[in-house]
Length: 428
Image (cartoon, rainbow, N blue to C red; front, top):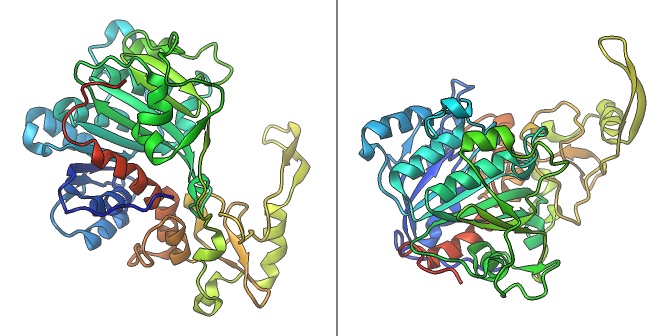
């Protein structure tokens, strides 16, 4: 694993952070010299803004706006100074429906759909034209929706292409690069291009792109990736509304593989294998001493059987509400969780005392079973212990279920810092 290099504050460039949560991007990138000039965090479903409160506790500098991003971008279209100019736009945006609402014959540009979060990102990029964009999402993005595999990602790629960006992406399991959690996420890097003509896009995918530099990979199938590429694997055609209607109807599975590069709506995509020869961190290394674990995190004896049932394999006959009988099957999950390997992915439902199939449970030295504490969940994502203090334990777990792996973002940020001076002229 590369050791991130610190830099003078602001020496890499200016940054705007969208869907900031508890500040994972900022925690990763500011030590590399990125200076946050504006950020946005808003939880529409709750009155108490726990994530924004946490962000303010760490950075009380007036940069965070706690307001619905759609309202802010609406204001930006009337006043271009509503959001400052910036070199880098970052955000871990939720996975939603990215389609254009209006039909093709009604569409008037991208403003046909403003109700979901991608279009706020699009409108901000269109208005401010940052040199770099760094986005994070669940890997499901590449294959959604189920009825049109890959459509949502195709819309995002086409939009970024039309705004003049070269895009690279990678589905990354953080544990493959030494981190203590098997968290899979899609990382997307977009660069504003000037007079570019990528003659060897696969070299960009395997060797020259920020993701390839930060998170090295082996080609699975290409022997000479540096040679000029043959015809693109996918060509994205039509207005985003047309892509909404037509892309992916015949796809039994997504055409977008675990890595790729896109320029001028031409897409080259491949599966890749990670290269890593460093130390592998494990769940056991983030655990706090048993004596520091509050009693409420230990599983009562009368609940152990319920926990074991939920985590065990099943093949059961069940009856639906309409009376239809069916068999429900699922495999087992390790119980308790192994501590000599990286943990499973932390989910938003990790908190709370009730038995669950997906919450982590480890065995204490005295044989008792216990759940993970908020500090342990923070450590699994690379945050400093106590990062989310000040909110209920269930909300702390929820925040870590939504968070990114800070160290992984920092490794990519090192490469972005090196290429943040000006729009890119040449690719190959």
